[in-house]
Amino acid sequence: MGIQIIFESILQNWNIILFFFIVAILYSSVGFGGGSSYLAILALTGIVFTQIRATALLCNIVVVFGNMFLFHQQKKIEWKKIISIVIFSVPMAYIGGYLKINKEFFFILLGFTLLFAAITMWISKNIISSDEKQIKINTKKNAAFGGIIGFISGMVGIGGGIFLSPLLHLTNWDTPKKIAATASFFILVNSIAGLVGQYSNPDFYIDWSLTSILLITVFIGGQIGSRMSNNYFTPIQLKKATAILIAFVGIRILIKYFF
Image (cartoon, rainbow, N blue to C red; front, side, top):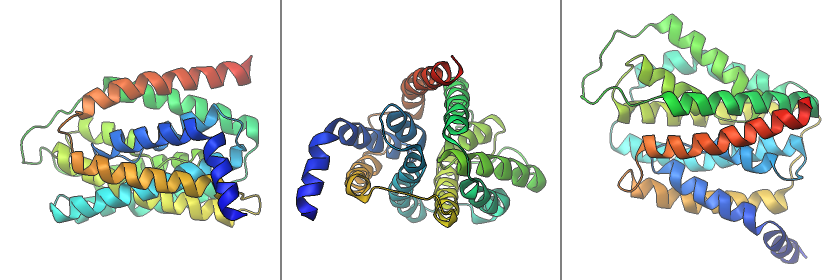
């Protein structure tokens, strides 16, 4: 019966599975999880909104875990600098995930989040090309930014990399590779914290017949993408294309729930 349910789920949701596979390949190739695109895809379906957040976070975790392994091997992770960013983001992501929100508020928040993410992704550029860090790190500012992004990420169901990465580039935080590594770790820990917060909420629900398929899908896609690196897709190309998709979905959600 279990195999039959899974097979039926694949047939009913083949388009979602295909999109998730493509997103995992593209995002992991430049060090991201793809949470915003997973949310955008799921938001256009009839899936229960409480499940959308959990599914996106689980897929994030699977994809960026593979990225983290590769970045660790390449010694691109600056642990001392990362700690100042995640020290408040993790507990705030947990609180954001734990909060009970209604369907209308969730989709309005999601719409604005996707729209803002699309704008930041469109205008951001990789500023640093050298291997030397450019400015002195402001610990208090990093902690504040991390906490705010973590809280919003936990509520919506993303890892927060789409907000953090442009911010780090615009402030000359470090080299592009190290920023990608930092964003991957940020996404990983915030996704875990947000998921734990959601699980702690009595209203937590997830359909494992579909979610398990999506997790396997993004794991395979993530492994393919992380090994492709950025030989085929540059971060800028991916950001531009994804920004258009995310903006379209965000605007569509806002129109539906405002008008």
